[in-house]
Length: 173
Length: 331
Ligand SMILES: Cc1cc2nc3c(=O)[nH]c(=O)nc-3n(C[C@H](O)[C@H](O)[C@H](O)COP(=O)(O)OP(=O)(O)OC[C@H]3O[C@@H](n4cnc5c(N)ncnc54)[C@H](O)[C@@H]3O)c2cc1C
Ligand code: SF4
Ligand code: FES
Ligand code: FES
Picture 1 (spheres, rainbow over the protein chains, first blue to last red):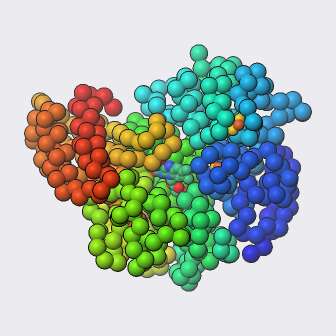
Picture 2 (spheres, helix red, strand yellow; picture 1 turned 60 degrees about the horizontal axis):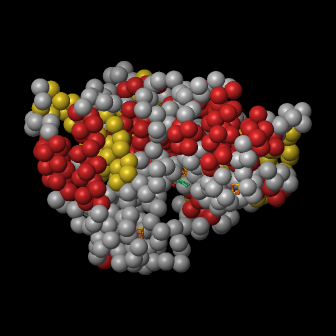
Picture 3 (spheres, chains in turn green, orange; picture 1 turned 120 degrees about the vertical axis):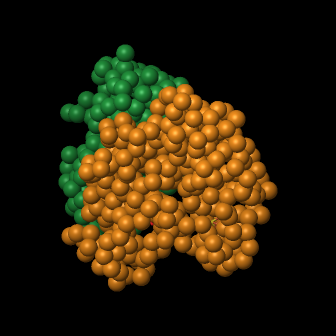
């Protein structure tokens, strides 16, 4: 069934008519031609489609476009400001944190979410003291990024790429 | 995916009234389970009534010292809530052990409770499955069932089903004696969480005792005055469903078990409250032998399948380890 929506993506509003079955991922890629988020599994299992919805990381393949409402969608593309790459973009390049790059926009959005969650003091499954301040150790980064799979297995470089930015932002010693 | 109408309602009562008129409709929470099942053709609602922003996203204090969790509270926010972390660590740990950061941001409390089994026959419409297609048989019974139930299954007849309930959060809520608040066409009711999920019995198509159109509005936690924790064993370190999990709370006084709560995940069609183990333990010395005997008392009823017998010793060991951790005074 066709429904009128307006998607706010990376700072611009886009009026669209979508079938109710359209996921946010498909609306972004197929309708708005924003191919930054990728389709890996289409079932919430790989994280390639990760975007920020009002600043929180979500799997866009499991979000129906009609449910998004006024929420601001940020893709990895949208993390750049005034044409300047985000610190995470630079860090992934500096640390050589990808091979084919397919999972990378999802990794970047997820990492942006991880940094925000750490700043907010959210614990993870590997946090021993649930009430202590969060420190993004390598173990914490691995656990918090576990929803993003990398078929090229660039994990060993993704962890330091995220760690460098975490250190610069004061959520890692 | 089958075509459907998408509806929002001004308030929960209107959403309930709307769904009551739509026998083929469903509530939509975060959609992380339902949208997935719709893509697979397993769920085929013709109307979705979006309740994610309609049900409360607040965690509030109850006068008795407990907490009320709105059905719309995301799993991530619940795990991060300071009161939950301090007073109900078992719940925070269970939530954090489930899914991924992205999924927990979107998944709701109500939807988590009502997520459906991950049985591979259930999610594959080309296979027999009594839960999805009553009377078609249970593919898992003699098929791939390494991660299926060891307790409370139905082996024969049209009710045959050996699936498990996949939620981690629900296991903690069962140990905490949570109360589920429901709004239905006939008004409000509350039920102890132990009465929400049901064993397959002779109708595995029904996971819970809720009737069509009943909306979960909140989950109440009674106060908890004993240390608690959650331990989950899975096939990889993160981002996988449980093989076996344990939610436990324990108070030891003068070396004797003064209070204990125990629930198991990954072992049955419901989150499994281990009453037999609890009864065995109360008043007994808090020793490794007593913990093992209690686990043994619970698991004496186990009826493992051809390929999941490993879950029996695994469950026993995880119970013992978790109770030892708690009796050592750690949280
Ligand atoms: C890759 C992957 C890994 C996962 N790993 C884990 C894991 O390790 N542990 C774990 O516990 N979970 C795991 N999950 C499952 C996840 O926790 C659930 O999908 C999620 O909690 C469901 O919540 P939701 O709000 O998205 O529900 P939805 O998908 O929106 O709904 C689920 C069901 O609940 C009904 N519903 C929703 N809200 C209400 C309400 N308020 N009242 C009545 N009915 C309602 C819907 O009609 C539907 O039937 C995983 C999921 C994925 C995709
Ligand atoms: S175990 Fe239950 S869900 Fe799985 S195939 Fe059998 S009937 Fe279906
Ligand atoms: S494409 Fe969304 S998680 Fe894989
Ligand atoms: S870089 Fe190729 S999938 Fe991650």
